[in-house]
Amino acid sequence: MTDCIFCKIVRGEIPAKKIYEDEDVLAFHDIRPIAPVHFLVIPKTHIPSMAELQPEHEATMGKVMLAASKLAREQGSTDGYRTIINTGRVGLQEVYHLHVHVVGGPDVLPAMLKR
Ligand code: 5GP
Ligand code: ZN
Image (cartoon, rainbow, N blue to C red; front, side, top):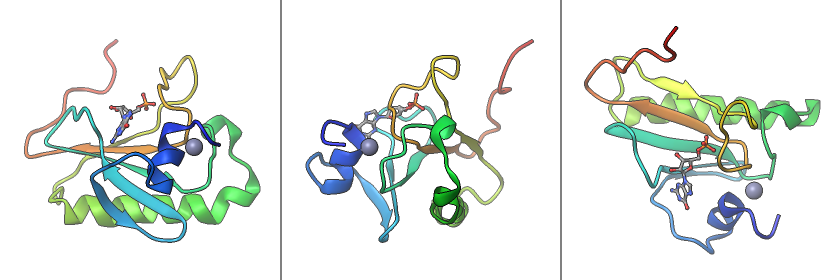
């Protein structure tokens, strides 16, 4: 995808504060952090959202989740954090390249959704 912002980060065409990279996975700090720890973990391949996941993505998404767990620990979130995947219109997804938010810090986060 030529004009996808996260694909541009993968290709090095837009700068990002990278945390981790391997052949399948990239992690970088969110440009507008909502907590002291807030980074994104993405598959390097362009998958628009959770809604488009296919069986062929199984191994890559496994790597994305394992990277999120390891990096959360390394970033200091040893007492918990929140992982968020926003999907589509209802999920208020902003960037249509599948990404896992890892959000945390020293303090307990607000309740996820209010009744
Ligand atoms: P979404 O609502 O799609 O789950 O979240 C997209 C996230 O990507 C937002 O938290 C936003 O701050 C972040 N973001 C958007 N553009 C950029 C960018 O160019 N660089 C980085 N590092 N993060 C971005
Ligand atoms: Zn993309």
